[in-house]
Amino acid sequence: MEGRSVTLEWTFDLHGVRLLLAEIFFEDDQGKTKLIDKVTGSSSRIDPAFSGRITGNITDSFSSITFLEVDRNDSKTYEFDVRDFNNRAAPPSRVKLEVLCK
Image (tube, rainbow, N blue to C red; front, side, top):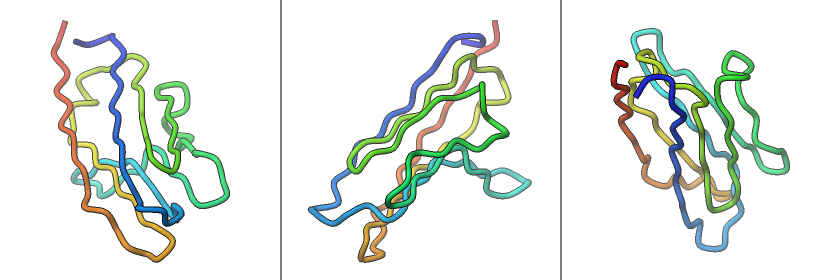
């Protein structure tokens, strides 16, 4: 429902190999838009365009993103991609968010 907060969560297992890169994004007619990412040795980074609209975190086995107040424009398919230090990618995980109007 519009105006409410919504959290999307993913868990993953890299089978003992360190995380190289993880990102949460959506794709539309304009291309790929990254919301949050994490590179080895750094903390999670939220794209400045979404600062104040979302919070999130990515660790070596868990990721989440919270939309503080969703609106209709947030109705999209969000994808989580992760690569390990051997540059192997886990299968992408997608979640479709449909925001209902008030």
